[in-house]
Each structure stands twice: as structure tokens, then as C-alpha cells.
Amino acid sequence: MADEKQLTKIEEAFKELAATVTSGGVDVEVAPFSHACSQISPLFGCLGIAFKFAEMDYVYKVNDLAAASNSIATLEALIDRDVEANRVRNAGSHSRNLLRVKRGLHLVKALFEQILVSEGNSLKDPASKAYAEVCAPHHSWAIRQAVAAGMYCLPTKEQLLKKLNEDNASAKIKMQNFIAASAPVILYVEKLFNSRKLGVDW
Image (tube, rainbow, N blue to C red):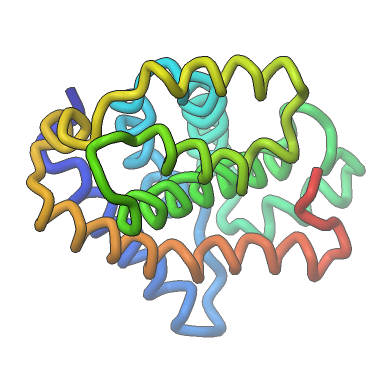
């Protein structure tokens, strides 16, 4: 079970991060960014085997960024250091891990968006649509097949909310708040890569 009121932790962490991003002229620090992203990790665990790929990959990469924060202050500096060393696209580079974490945030944002517009108790359709939008284009056929099979093992919406200690009304508000707060954060990370002509589709 996720920690008590995990959606509240997610919501509050990203509200703070979004405030930094939208204030203008302030570089986002690696430490608060990785801390906010770590609040997402328990959510992947609540979704079961279908999102096991995301949980394992995401947690490892968030931990890498958290460790990097001991010696690198900002996300800009993190990418620039990898650019200087010509290792941006190398497996295990901080920049590559940052891009994967951004994709994890985008996946959760898309999932929440789909949950809010879906009817009924099943998460299969919302989760499948979110995965197809964000992750499927970057995954091999084998991974896509494994994820598709795992979608049949998702908890119901009711079971997920119980794990998160939420009811429909409270979860809806917190999901909407995360969607609103995560959007500028995701865009900020994408702009860091695009402004250096690195792209985000790798």
C-alpha cells in the first residue's frame, strides 16, 4: 500500500516545482526535482505488473538524479556537463535518465487525464491509452506485448483509490492539480533538451 495520502504528497511536491518553473529566470535544482519525482514511485507500485517496467526503470533513474544532486546543482548544469563530455545519449548518463524520468511524469499525467474522462471501474482503457500515447512509440514489440498482457491484471479504479487512501472526489481534485502542475515541469525539461538541439524522442 502506498504511504498515507500519497496523492497529496505528489500534488504538493509538483505544485512547488511548478511555482519554481513558472516564476521565470530561476534554474530548477536537481535535488527538489528528484525529490518531487520520487513521490510518484509508490503510485507505479499500486498499479501492479502492467506498470512494473515503469516502476523499476523510473525508480532507478530518479535515484540516479538524487545522487547526482550531491555534485550538480541544476538540471541545466546536469545536461551541459553531459554535453561537454559527449555522453548525453549514453546509457546511464544523467541526461538520459532525466529524459526517462520526464517520460514517467508524462505517463502519469496522461493516465490521470484518461482516468478523469473515463467511465466505469476499469483502468484498462485509461492505462492502455496513456501507455500508447507516451511510452509505446519508444518500446520494442516485445515490451509492448508484455505491457498489453499486464493490462489485464490492473487493479480496478476502486481498488487503486483504496490503496491510495482516497475517495473519488478527493482523488479527482488531486489528479487535476497534478495534471496542471506537471505540465509546465514537463515542458521545462523538454525545452532544456530542445534548446540544445538534443531532441526528446530518443
